[in-house]
Length: 261
Image (cartoon, rainbow, N blue to C red; front, side, top):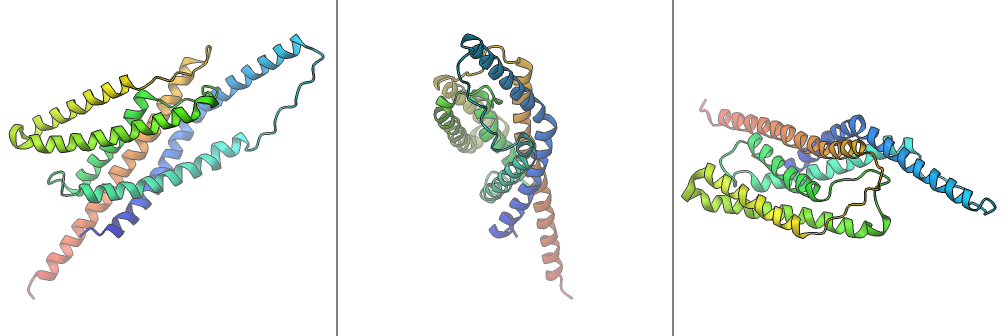
């Protein structure tokens, strides 16, 4: 009933819808903190420029570099393009993950399977890395540590996903002895303990400058995590509903074809 091609196409279309939802959420809740962070950066730069000018009034000061991409373009076309491309790509990967999980993690309906895959994806790909290396707004990063931060962030994603798969297998292995509920609790607990140990072992990077508004930092990070949640929730709910509807329609049609005239 579920071909890989149809699932992939459906996943990419649902991913497009998830990208639109993520763009709207990021615009409503994320652009405000980003704008405030940019204002803080501009104020810091102006203060440093004024201090340098006061220290050596006769020194030649370079003109400000022209802005390659305007803030308006970044917050509209740029953000929309990034959200849509990310949504479509993630939707395709989500469809493949659903195809692997459906019928193998339990006797769940397509809607329940999609919801579980979305929950697992959000936890392992978004929440776990966020707890160790949360997103930072403009004016809070050091270009010299960009490579290190990028490697550590993606390493946390790989570890989170791999540990999630191991926890899934652990839960299935414990199921015959302890039952579904207890096996699930034990697997989740083992996953939480392992991730805690890993995060305590990895280096901590804190580059938020002194004086940066704590409320702006909190709102930006909350909006960043919320955007991820909206993306994964849209994927799980919409993909599951469409797939289950398709399965039921196909099953009904086949049942009608087998009824003798």
